[in-house]
Image (tube, rainbow, N blue to C red; front, side):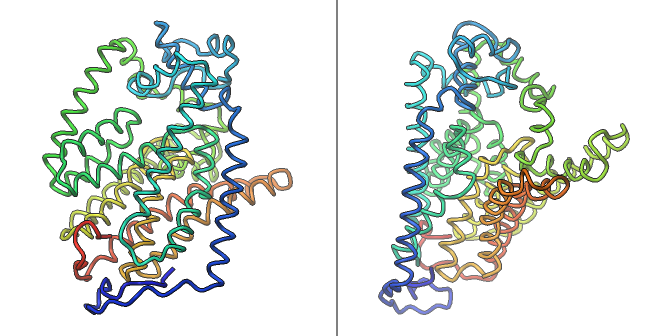
Length: 443
């Protein structure tokens, strides 16, 4: 991946420009095989998923939005009757768990049949995936074309991407919004950037953490627009949805219902890769599921401290490293991982947000602006969940606890390693001169 590096972009100050070296034939064969595997995977996935309109998570979105359109309160009333009427699975998710704004935006799809709505929703998510990868891969870089193609193929084969597609989740829309926010900030389009952050927060809540990034960057205009757009969006949602449903959603989050009150396998399972739940699972593994009140209080305290600690480390690290646009992208990478890590709930598909530092680190490494330790940490993060899921499928019926529980923690390992990689990527910018090719090429 280091072939074709433009020597004018190296931090050693060399201004000579060398023509990109052609990719080695052996590497071209490897890239071709990787692309073929990606194509087969993509075709298999599309064919396999075309009939999943009745399954999670699309079925929950559809029944929740339809319940709201029919005048019910999906946060307090069961979704089972609607699901049974339409042949949509609700299983243990009998109440809505998404924000009122999310359901309001999804509501137009409920005028279509579930099958047609699923096709539209799946297409929108594919567009978000293509647009996000296009923007991430399109940054100026020392990577030659074959290496960029391999990078995109690896992103498509990333295990959380498979989880996202199978559950018809929307986290790639958040990835796209975050990238657009950052790009528009670079271009001085503060209103559009603020609108993107506000919309992302109204849809999924956890992107609100990126307001901290705007404070660190002293992007007061963008932050102001985000607050105004969030207030306007909240008022529009309230006007259409009404106070009872909004308050029910707030009670759902504060009271810990729906997504927080799932059966034990979900509540304490390895699918929740956020820092807090991961720390809690360590307590449960050591002291057992049924903790004493004192030990349970200790668990909550340690988990909360871990979340606050990660957030504080991010604030400290990014606030003390100010400077050029290259470092601004590095700070952005760390904050995108942080907003997932400190979320109370972050399922495996949330890890698609780590594709942002994945691409930025690859680009920086090709320009000689990322150290090997950073690259290898990101490689380890990518590999951890792949090995975990592969071994889990092989061992699920052959071994029991505690080994199977350790193997299943690959997602949490990927979360931790991604944060470390993003942190190291930020530190790699210390002592490096600003890249000589402009703000748009930084990072």
